[in-house]
Image (cartoon, rainbow over all chains, first blue to last red; front, side, top):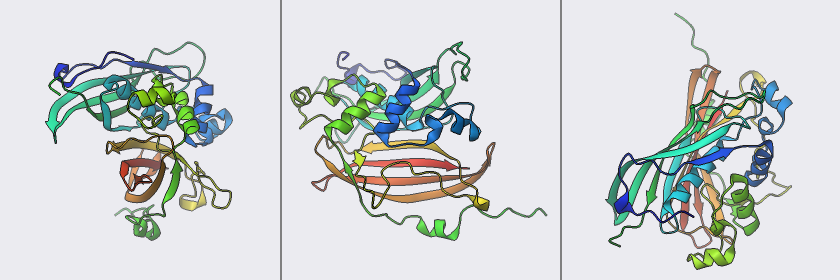
Length: 155
Length: 162
């Protein structure tokens, strides 16, 4: 894990370390089993196309969990994720990078907790030239926000 | 004057807003946590290794963000997974998409061995006309309470039916 971050050292506008994902079809099947979401648009290409989609799509909730990982990894052992939310605005396909990002929106103290609000999102990476459907580069398919508690150097 | 198309929201749906469903048992266990963490690609050992998790002050391995246990499945009651979109207007099946999620944690650790009672209710139903045609936007809130009676998380899910 990365070094512990402290509330005191955070500045509004700071970008948090990125997390890179690229879903294989196997990962979607693993997610289906782990989450209990067996909707066929996520693993049955014929079913997905029959429902008007270009291909199987990445589960929205998996992208939500990626954003959960993004903030969990950032806050470290001494921090904690207080809340996070996201909207599934656009579809993502397999075999295209999903870049998870976050920028600090606000830092404040409330009820004795040292809090940081972070704007979080996933955006699509460069399109792979593999003949599969993909998004243009840089589409923010999953915007959201998170609030985390960080340790303070003052204790 | 153009005639307004009938609302997609039935009286029954309207009447259900705010009504709590029965508690659903969600079991948080090591296998479920590891399966979830592995599917996401988590690398923090706090989700995999019990001794490591204990060294960080937890009772056991902890639930990754957005994992709130696995609903206990029974062939009698079904459930415990996505069961399909149901019927929309004109008797054709709804197409369903996940519109968004929110998780608000109270700070109580969620660890392997916990049993959560999940109580859900519909908090709002809206209808819009988008590029996909008429669409229903339903928000459901679920409150998760652990075996000690402590609320551990409030989650809100938005589903889109069109």
